[in-house]
Length: 508
Image (tube, rainbow, N blue to C red; front, side, top):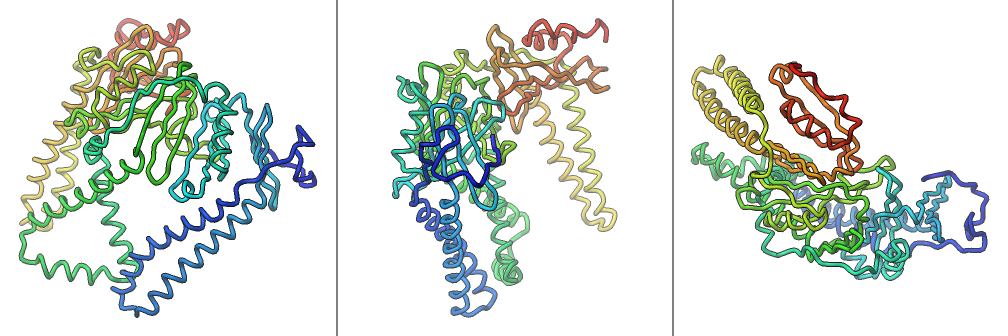
């Protein structure tokens, strides 16, 4: 909760306990933030200097711009941090932790200690050397209060975590997952690999464009490849993009999951330690867990791998309504599928069902996917015919588009239907869908708030419906497309008898 405060109140007291002093953040965070800013500016200065040199600027001016920018940026960061520490205080008692910022206006952000369900202690490489850490707290509401203290003494941060989590912080636990260095081989199989490669190429051209060096770069490259056939150039460009993307995804994997260890407490709470440059120590209350999500894109499936995320209250991607970053849902990185399914089984008490345990959807769902594949192929072919009307010698373009788009869309349609399925037991509901972004959502029945039903006119004619499970955890709505009407009643019955009025009349 964030509330304005009376600026006239003494800084050394707490409204609840006037005799207790308020505490300040550790001053070593000024040094840490300044060094991190200087390092980031130094890395940015390298491509900037190359761009200036390609633009014809002298060495003296390059040094002035680059070194001056680093000094100015680092000094500005130090000033901002000095001001931030001067205006920020916090106080912890038996009932509440509050952080007060008194600058032009006075604001207090508070969180009840009894409602704290997640505590994350993170420290980047500079903070670790200085012995400080950042503490992030979140409450048990769906998108509840979050509070960040950056930074505290490392020992003080650990003591704060133990005090907020009470017995859970020291409770006996069992290790259920530890990263294997060999898992890094799965990282390039992610669907983000070509995306990262394209981003890297785009950044290079963007920097070159800032200094008008793109024509020079293209001329240098063209002088060396002007005799190479265009198809070979296309293949080479694709391979370069994939290679750069593979290096990027492997580097991100190493940074995020270095020395990862996942522990499971007796009360269901989870404790994770991971990170290379930025070390993270996260504790998640087991009462907030509503299910698991298993991600299996085509590359992972080909290698027998999967990635596991937790479905929990207040955990997800992006920011909450207060602009605070939500805790990451990732529990297990890309790893052998049996590792992810085993972890899910330990946490939920039920395993993630395999293909043989899922109930397939009606043949009408397959026909819908093949129809979409045909329509997408026809649309791309129509677009490819446009240049042929102007340049007839490009007759081969529509032929290539028909062949490639037809093959790809047909494969996606077949694979999408093959992956479509669901299962209902007395404890959970499993929903699998997708091809390129295949995922299996396993929700605990007690955590399902209800079901939403959507039927398009085409689905109504085919006897299909799309179901959305509503949950307080994760993304909030979990989609199960193209379920048969006879199957739908069995699925939405997991929310209780109150949903019986949704039953479709016979013949509808």
